[in-house]
Image (cartoon, rainbow, N blue to C red):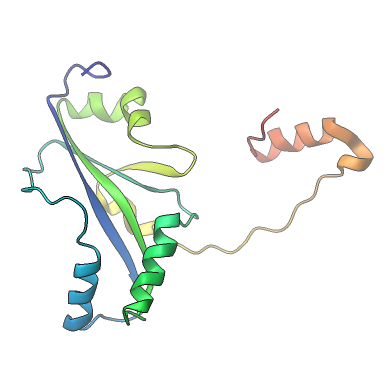
Length: 161
């Protein structure tokens, strides 16, 4: 409420995403369900308010994903190409104020590794596999630090000073 006075409640829970090659059998679904049911269990609160989904940035694979996918494969779930985890937040309050308040959004995620999306449809590109970009080089030996600074700005690398 310090960041947005209209907020009256916040509820959060983990949500899981699976990139599957084919269709899981009922037995495989049961195994996956058991693997993804962990941690403290509470009575599910009513999902009211604006749903914000915090998930890994597109093009990244979280450490959680790497380990969870390995575990799934060790449990005979070979159709699983990748598992990923996000956090769904339901924030009750004035929707427009919540979704446009940069401080609220920044408080929910680490922008270096995660992104905030509005609604579950945003997860549709979670497992997008683009083509690698062409390798680019900077001639720091011949042109020095100024060339690196210029390419940093031109390419949007966000290198530290």
